[in-house]
Amino acid sequence: QQQVKQSPQSLIVQKGGIPIINCAYENTAFDYFPWYQQFPGKGPALLIAIRPDVSEKKEGRFTISFNKSAKQFSLHIMDSQPGDSATYFCAAERNTGNQFYFGTGTSLTVIP
Amino acid sequence: ETGVTQSPTHLIKTRGQQVTLRCSSQSGHNTVSWYQQALGQGPQFIFQYYREEENGRGNFPPRFSGLQFPNYSSELNVNALELDDSALYLCASSSRGLNTEAFFGQGTRLTVV
Image 1 (cartoon, chains in turn yellow, orange):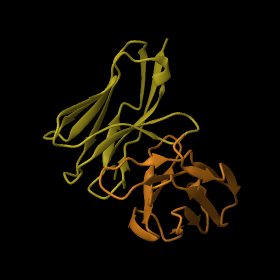
Image 2 (tube, each protein chain N blue to C red; image 1 turned 60 degrees about the horizontal axis):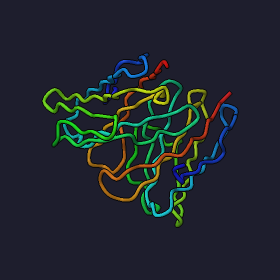
Image 3 (cartoon, rainbow over the protein chains, first blue to last red; image 1 turned 90 degrees about the vertical axis):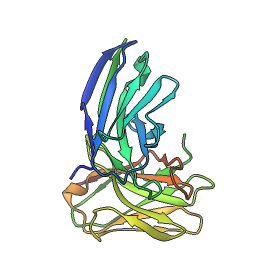
Image 4 (cartoon, rainbow over the protein chains, first blue to last red; image 1 turned 45 degrees about the horizontal axis):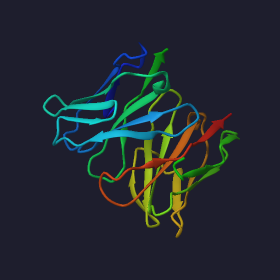
């Protein structure tokens, strides 16, 4: 059973566009929601993370929106660049110290 | 670079064999987690080690086992390899505590034939 569901599977946007990746979860015990970026041949790298006591967090061009009642959260990438082309994973953790449940990933392509 | 190194980078094994993968954690980190990432999928949590003790395990059979050494480096051992064990194996190191950042290595690509 997939604890964290992620969509879409792939996404293509023009440079400057705002790709949005969505995730949903069922377990209300989750209390930490990171997003990871992974380039081919590399391990995932933390992009931004949020806790359920806030509804939005912004770091640079990356924003997480969090809807606790709907058990959904999403990643927005403002002014997307070709260098943002990568696979993005959402994840969730329930007070266990970095024992994550990952989504299935979204392959993002930003066209110049 | 994250400071987390994994070896080997690639490995080909035959079904039924045993394999050992290695991970050196980032300096100052005392916790290592292992994940299996099948092609086109998200990483799945295998287990975590803290101060040489297993500190949580995902839904993986006992033929997946691990060790953590006094310098906090770690090994993942897989016995009786199956074709479905073919995947990228990732380790992540972190400090003990909630919501501390986990740093991933580049992974070991295991192919079972």
